[in-house]
Image (cartoon, rainbow, N blue to C red; front, side, top):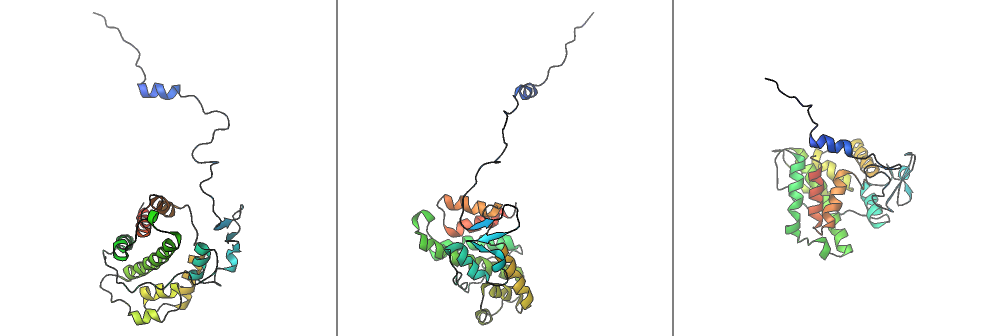
Amino acid sequence: MSTASTAPTAPASAAQAEAVPPPPPGFKSGLEGHVAFRTQIAEPDKDGGALRYRGVDIEDLVGKVSFGNVWALLVDGRFGPGLPPADPFPIPVHTGDVRVDVQAALAMLAPYWGYRPLLDTDEPEARDQLARASVMALSYVAQSARGIGVPAVPQRRIDECTTITERFMTRWRGDPDPAHTRAIDAYWVSAGEHGMNASTFTARVIASTGADVAAAMSGAIGAMSG
């Protein structure tokens, strides 16, 4: 008795893969060579040695102009007070995870303040909503980071502060080292414009659907868990 044997054949998927022709000359994979967006806000140097916000060199801002004023430059195109003090709301969520707390607390602002979808909101109103939600985000971060069961800093102490960064550090630390406050302010200014990192891009996508400002910010923070 004899048996016939045949050579094994490659799976269909492998055969199909072998049949894929090579890319044509000049082909670029992914997004290489494509313009993601155009902006007048930030102007990085092509060699990576300089950065300008609205034409102002970052070296003229860090340590010289407060974060709240730089926020106005970025958003409004000119120096100004920019960010108002945060409303004196205690954070409504305390899980021990700062990201979770802030993400949930921000989402709650829309129904409380009556934020409408961005498609139904004009530009000045959207700008004011963004400013108000931004300082609440900082307030919530500070309150959550302070820890569960740790008494909140009295509001009268917060009201004595003169800058957004000082209020943040005081809510967090109570009596912060002034050098630490200056360092945080300088860091926020230097990192003030990151238009295409994951969280900011997420906020862009959510805002483009017409969702409200607080939803876009909450989603951006959610992206940080990735």
